[in-house]
Amino acid sequence: MIRWRKSSQSVGAGECVEVARLSDDQIGVRQSRTPDVAPMIFTRQEWAAFLLGVHALEFELAALDAEQSSDV
Image (cartoon, rainbow, N blue to C red; front, top):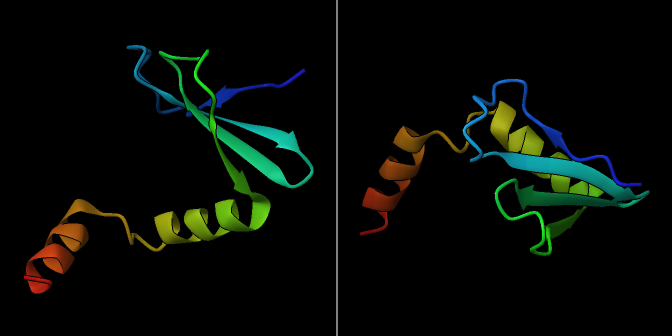
């Protein structure tokens, strides 16, 4: 059985991202409002790279905005 997990920071409004280990090398990510839609699937290596980017603040809106404005 797949165990989907939500962030402990989730406010419970039904707009949550859920994550689950699907197999030894696959991580699933889905929208909690649409559990019947197939999840996005990542390898463990891809997921680890994403989490490193999150911890390094690579996805902060200010950084993304600055990057976008420099591309223009």
